Amino acid sequence: MTKTRKLGLVLAVGNMTGAWIGTRMAVKRGAVFIRYFVLVAILAAATKLILDAFKAL
Image (tube, rainbow, N blue to C red; front, side, top):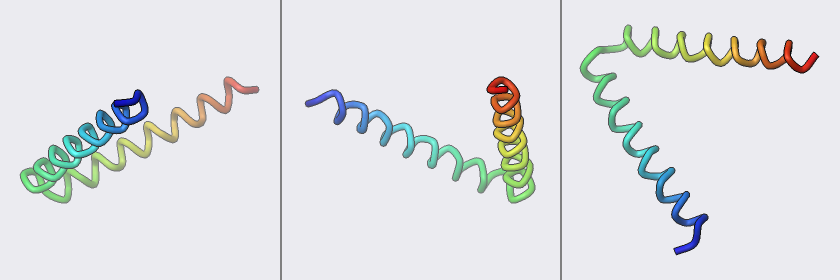
């Protein structure tokens, strides 16, 4: 098995695991939890992009 295939397999397993955990959390905690989780993720990504833009100056 080549390195690329091993990496692809690891990424696929991680993706499936994350989807499974995310689905279980969404069902248990409901839409409000997901709404806040997505909001925090968007704010974190925006903050990183802004900080990276200032570092590039």
